[in-house]
Amino acid sequence: MVTSPRRLVLLAALAAVIGVGGGAAAYVLVHLIALLTNLAFFHRVGWNLPSFAHLHRSPTVVLVAVGGAMVVAVMARWAPVIRGHGIPEAMEAILTKQSRIAPRTALAKPLSAAIAIGTGGPFGAEGPIIVTGGALGSLVGQVVPVSPSERKILLASGAAAGMAATFGAPLASVVLAIELLLFEFSTRAFVPLVVASSVAAGMHSALFGTGPLFAVPHHNFAGLSKLPFYVPLGLACGLLAVVINKGLFLVESGFRRLPVSEFWWPAIGAVGFASVGLALPRVLGVGYDQIGQVLGGHLGLSLLAALALAKLAAWWVALASGTSGGTLAPILLISGSFGALMGNLADRAFPWAHLSPGAFALVAMAATFGACTRATFASIVFLFELTRDYNAILPLMLASVIADLVASYTMKDSIMTEKLTRRGLRVPADYHADVLGTTRVATVMTPEVETVHVGDTVATVAARFGSNGHGAYPVLDDDGRCVGIVARGDLLRAGWSDDQVLGEVATGEVVAVRPDDLVIEALRRLLEEQIEHLPVIAGDRLLGICTRTDILRARRQQFAHEEAQPGWRPARLRGTRRAHRGRPGGPTGGQMA
Image (cartoon, rainbow, N blue to C red):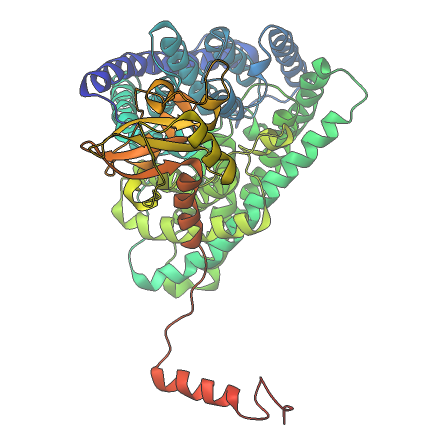
C-alpha cells in the first residue's frame, strides 16, 4: 500500500527515537553483562568484558552458572518469551499477533540475558538486544496510533537498532531486519529502518568507539587465483551449518523428553555448559575476545579444534535448555575456529598460494551464519562491514551462497524457523512482487458483459437469473450509462412485486473500478463492500466486469510464469526430429533398432 509523505515522516521520526532507545539499551546490556561477569567469576567491579582464558577452575563455576540459571527460570514464569534467543518469538508476533510484544519483554529479555551470560552462559548479547529493540519498537507502535503493518516496521526498526548499536554495522542491521522480520521491502519500511540503524550506529560510535565490537585484522583476499580455495570452504561451512542446526534440534528434543518440569531445564543446561567450561574456560561468556584471537591467527591448531567443539557442545546444551541468550556470537566463534583450522591446513597443503587462515575464518563466519539462519545477504554485509575491506567481498559472496545451497538442500528449516514450524506456523522464505499489485484491471476483466435495462421488470430479470448462472447484471439507462447493478440476492428480498422496474430494485450507488486501477484495489473493494461483482467503468461507460474469478486469473498467470518452457533449437534440428518421429522405427512407430 502507498504511504503518504506525512505518514512516512512520522514513521521516520518514531524510528529515530527507537534508534536512541536501542543504542542506550545496547550500552546498558553490554556493561551489565561485564559487571555481572566480573562480580561472579573474578570478584571485582568492572565495566569491561573480561576474558575467560585464564579463569581459575573450581566447582564455583558450576555453582555460579546454576544460580544464574535458576534466576532466569524464575523470570521465565513472569515472562515466558525470554526463553531462547527470542527472534522466533519476534517473528511469531509479526505473523500472528499484529506485531504486539508485551511491554515486560523490553525489561525481562535484557535482564535475563545479562544474568545468563554474566554467570557464564556461552551466548552473545546481540540476540537479546535485537529482541529488546524489537520490543521497544512494538511498544512505541502500541502507544502511538499506527496500523499493524506500521507497527511491524517499528518493531523491525527497533531490532535493527539493537544490532547496529551492538556491532556498529548499520547496513547489515537493515538487511537482517528485512530478511528475518519485515517480510516486505518497500519505501515505507526502508526509510524507518535506515533512520533507526543510522541513529543506533551513531550511538555505538559515541558509546563504544568508532570501530566494530571486536577487531578484525587485515587479511589478504585479493586475486582470482585464490577464489577457488573458498569453494570447498563454502561446501564445508554448509555442512557445518547442518551439524549446528540439527544438533541443536536434537538436543532440544532431548530436553523435551526429560521427565522433569521445564522450570528445571536451565539448571540442567547450566551444569552441562559449566562442566564444558571447566575443561576449556574460553567457551564461557560472550567470547568476543576469542573471536578476535581466532581472526588474528593467535591460536594453534589443537586449540582451534578444541574451541570449536567445546563451544558447540556448551552452546547446544545451554540454548536447548531454554535459558536466555543469543546465537550470533557463538556461531561466529564456532565457525571462525573451524575456518581458521581449514585455513591452516590449506596453507600447509598449498604453501605457494600464501593463504591466510584468518581470511578463511572470516569467510567461514559469514558462510556458516548465513546458512544457519537463511539470512545469507545479511551475513555477507555484516562481515564485510567488520572488515571494511572490499577485497573480502568476493570470497564472502562465493562461500556464503555455496553454504546456503548446501544447507537449503539438506534442511527444511533454519535455526530461526524450526520452533515456529513445530507450532504449525510456516514462515515465508522468499519475497516477490505481488502480481495483484502490478496487474491492471483491464488485463483480467471480462469484457463481454450481459446487461439489463433500467426499465425491465423484476419478473423479466428473475427469469434471466433462472435461465443462466449469472450472479449479477449491470443496469444501463437509455443512454447506455451504468446506473446500478442488480444481484440475485436483491430479488430475494421480501416485498418486491413482479411488475416493479429495476430502477426501484437495483443498487443505485455503483461500486466500480476503472480499467487502469490495479487488481489489488479491485480486491480491496470487493472485500470491503462484501460484494461479488465490480463493473469496470471509464467515464460513464461500461467496459466490462471484474469478479473474484477474474482476479484469480492474474494469479494463474503468475503460476504460468513458473512453468518450464521448451528451450531454443535450430529450425533444421526441429525439422529433423519431426521427420524422425514420423518414420517407422522412430519413437512413434515401429520398434527400436
